[in-house]
Amino acid sequence: MGSCPRRPGLDTLAAYDEEGQPVTTRITHWIAGRSWSGTAERQGEVYDPATGTVTGRVDFAGPEVVDEAVGAALAAFQDWRNTSVARRTTVLFAFRELLNARREELAAIIVSEHGKVHSDALGEIARGLEVVEYACGIPHLLKGGFTEQASTGIDVYSLRQPLGVVGVISPFNFPAMVPMWFFPIAIAAGNAVVVKPSEKDPSAANFLAGLWREAGLPDGVFNVVHGDKAAVDRLLEHPDVKAVSFVGSTPIARYVYETGTRHGKRVQALGGAKNHMLVLPDADLDLAADAAVNAGFGAAGERCMAVSVLVAVDPVGDALVERIKTRMAALTVGPGSAPASEMGPLVTGAHRDKVTAYLDSGVTDGADLTVDGRKHPVTGEGTVGGFWLGPTLFDRVRPGMSVYDDEIFGPVLSVVRVGSYDEGLVLINGNPYGNGTAVFTNDGGAARRFQHEVEVGMVGINVPIPVPVAYYSFGGWKSSLFGDAHAYGEDGVRFFTRGKAVTQRWLDPSHGGINLGFPTNQ
Ligand code: NAD
Image 1 (cartoon, rainbow, N blue to C red):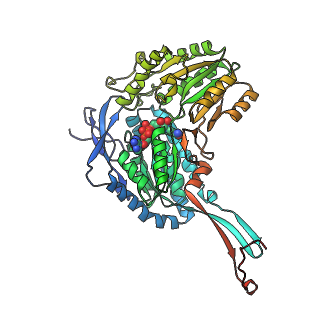
Image 2: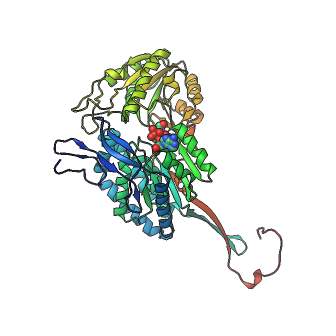
Image 3: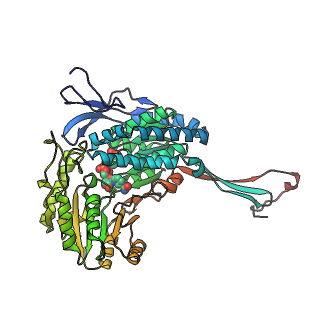
């Protein structure tokens, strides 16, 4: 094979030989500041979705490896929680600088294992960076309250303290951003973290681990275990794991919430979605069509905030569908690493096949297959074995059809036609998911009514993907989130800390005497 050039960054990344053929690399756990040196009993395959080739094998952790990571985190926790807020903040700032400086490398890793286009990978890093920057403000975020002379001679104040070891379990679709919704705040607040990334694109987490080390984070404060259900289950059961942040599909989110809370943990579990975009008759249809295509097909629809249902209020349906079709035909589908590509492949062959099956079931259920993604050309060299599916549009979709009822999580947009705003609202509020939604209109009164009446956690007004900035919090309602804490923002700080209220009196002789009564204000 000769020399084996690797992408810069980590030794766990896919490498290519002199003929440009992928060399399968091993991707392993990161525990106590170094790569795990054991031998895994089980491994999973990691693909380059644009070519369909196996580029890596990721070690799967059994319970004993999870125990090792939790043990390392627990050992690091005491010193880290006692490290001054000033020092912790310095490490956060250093991490922020490194992440910003090396974002191109991280984006290349994401593209190579997830398949999304490079600009989109940079976008997810930028949104993760936002949370890191928010966490750099931890001195301010951890400030408690203080009431002097709450009772005579008595002051009362509050503290927020870290929980200990916390687990972060993340999905494949944002291998960098979703973990970064949680761990910057958790670490800044003084916790130690064990991340269990998706086994489909595990290398981004290892890259981030390397950056933490370079930033000066003590070994053991940030650990990564790779794997599947076995690793997740051990994290959920482990007595030293105090909290779990999970993001993934609704059935697993529900399972994680129920199992984790049953084991006495604090759990936030963000689940799946079916996001509706309501287009009112007065909307600018060109802008609405742009937004629907961007939010429906960006990242090949593999976003929890993707628009998957377009609700067209009469009479805009025909005009909107025509505009969307025109835009879809012009989309360039190709490898994420090619600058011209606007949409990449799906993450695995199995997922591509699952999404493709909906094209048939939609037709069987009676929807109009207006644009068939199987016919869309793929632009690029060496893509024959890739996990491709072009953008698909279904029209005249109704509840009860599988393309409406299920979260497809691919480049499939469904148009539901309704007669009025009220009919559209009833449809959206009747959906079991409540992650994101958007209304497109020029009528401020209608938009204001929508924001008030819609039962969804994140609402866009002429904004199709309303992911809140880092100083608000991210989270859906209903089957899109289990638990009562949203991700990042103030909810994130509350989730990763516990409150303590202190009532203090500095004694002097006048405080003596016996009084068996319950303390009351004096
Ligand atoms: P997934 O539920 O299959 O996997 C998520 C995580 O759970 C992974 O780390 C995986 O290894 C683990 N896991 C899988 N099966 C498990 C099991 N049986 N027991 C325990 N753990 C298990 O999700 P995915 O396919 O990786 O990601 C896509 C899903 O994530 C979509 O449903 C999407 O809507 C959702 N998502 C939601 C949000 C949000 O903010 N609400 C954000 C991103 C993605």
